[in-house]
Length: 324
Image (cartoon, rainbow, N blue to C red; front, side):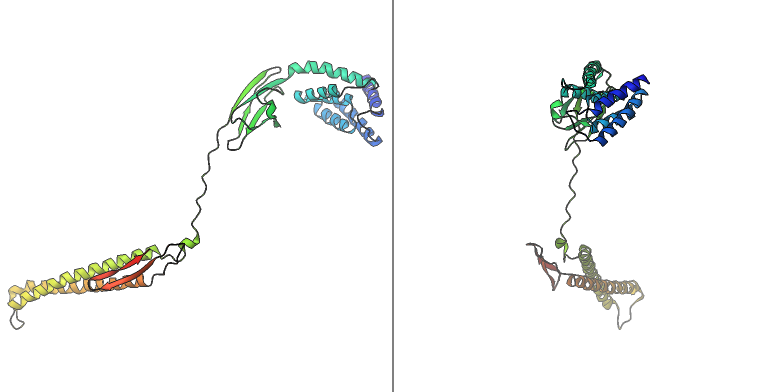
């Protein structure tokens, strides 16, 4: 109770005075006084999270070295040594005047003592960039300035997490184990990200506009080939049929043939049937192939490319010619 009463008295002296740092209104002072009392109570029961929150809020309303020192004590209780170190340094940088309340002078002295006790407990991490030489580096999600790379950087003891990012490289992340007063060096070598091949640009629709179907053209040539083969086979078997007919005329008199000629007669009829069938296939194939070619859609000009063709039909010739 005596400690609480003493703390309350000091707070009232600080918060009711007219500090040179700020000119808060009465409502802000009342709120800051209430927050400071809550902070002291939390600090006494070692609820450092609540204490840090309350002292931080109170200092934002009424800035005073007494509040900053207590705020640093709460941060130190949370293991956030780097932040606590900065709060003590802040009190020393800002200092106090000869006309300041005695509580402020005591706070300044406390900051010096606690800072000297805290420094040996800080961890130190040296981040050395190997590859690439420039990157965005953070320690526990706090950005490390380029000027602080390669030299000692204060870190909370424990397991600070170092991250690095750079264009064209895969993200880097590694946890460092550092104890109070220890110094650790981490060399960062990042791996280049795999290059993503650009997706091929599909040809413009203009390239394909009006182009005849390749399947249709191949089918035309196949049918024409079958037709040509049929005509050739029909011609050969027809010639063989005529040869057999000539032989039978010399053996048969008045359409009466000897029994020994029956095999030749059968072969003659077979050649006739085969010749008729293959000639029919040949004629049908040539006709179908020509129809497919003649009815094929014409290709539109694309750029400077042109396709012209015409069928060729004549004695002993079936085909087409074209220019590109």
